[in-house]
Picture (cartoon, rainbow, N blue to C red):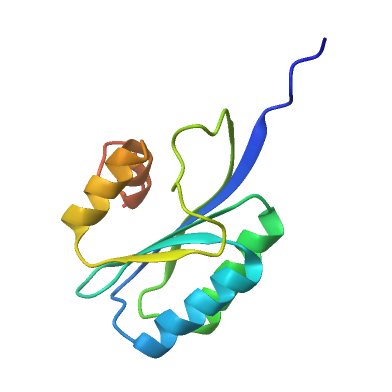
Length: 133
């Protein structure tokens, strides 16, 4: 009997100066639902952080394009990747199309720690040695 092939999840990490525009957040939410992408947004004072995940690479890429169209100040796509693993851990634990807003870096860190994604996030945000600055 052959083992099941590993599951693949596609993920994007975006950093902006800030995220305060309700109009833009509504557009991101609409795009997430349309593309079946799970999203966590760190809104409010700087920095703005977006983490998106989906089972489809195209879905994540379409969502990222919708973010680019909104012309966020200091927009930076820090990571766009395929994650292959058991996927029982190290994922956002959100329903596809669901968007969650978090208003502080402390709360975002706590949430990502629960999802076992804190190390990944700190590395790619440039907070950990070897990450992007």
